[in-house]
Image (cartoon, rainbow, N blue to C red; front, side):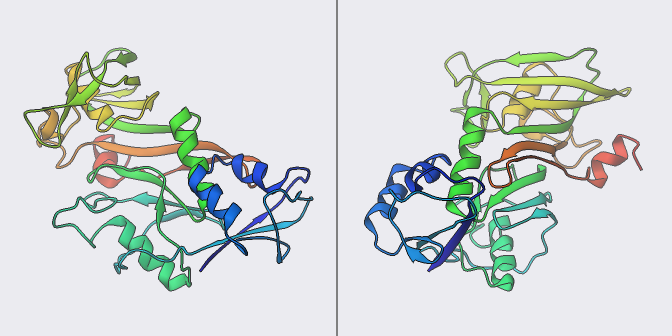
Length: 290
């Protein structure tokens, strides 16, 4: 049984209002409402209608457990506390299984190994994804309230993620790309700009120009699959190394994309959180940072 504890910073809300403030789903709320012993306040069995006081410890219990086969692989931890595990994802690894051959050799399996060694019998809860060859910051939640909260922030665009990318050619000025994105029906796993696609907005700021390529800082107003890669290709500046969308391998052997900056408000500490991930060597070399 997984046990999740929450220190109450400010009393006055009942349990239902508190967990709802994290945008917890209806099915999970129903579980805590109907399962005796799943909700405790200061170690005593409680109901969702009970009022929380300052410095109370709310405990949620359910049948969660470590749900993935551990993979002995080191992870680069940027930050960790009772609610978050934030790591710098390396290239050449999937976040989770693609349903084919990569079943137990993924980033989530490496996190499972880390949890196992720490004695944490909880599921691996990733809040978003990065492509196999995109590096950078990834947020894992260590409890169900944090997971639902971070996913809600991403959905409402209140969690700010900034990417560093290196695009082919010279980009002279900042650009806003507002083009719908849909699946490419002719190539499996590929996406394309489409007037019938889902809304997609990408903000591109020029960071540093070189003779044959441009480093850009990219902010997403939406979160579509391959959004940066598709949009940069659509304006004639595919990412270096991104052969799926028209880039070449002359300077980079993978798409030159790194999630380097994340900011969001943390309701547990009631503080703004900000994290940076070191730029990987292959990109730093092109940017003349070494």
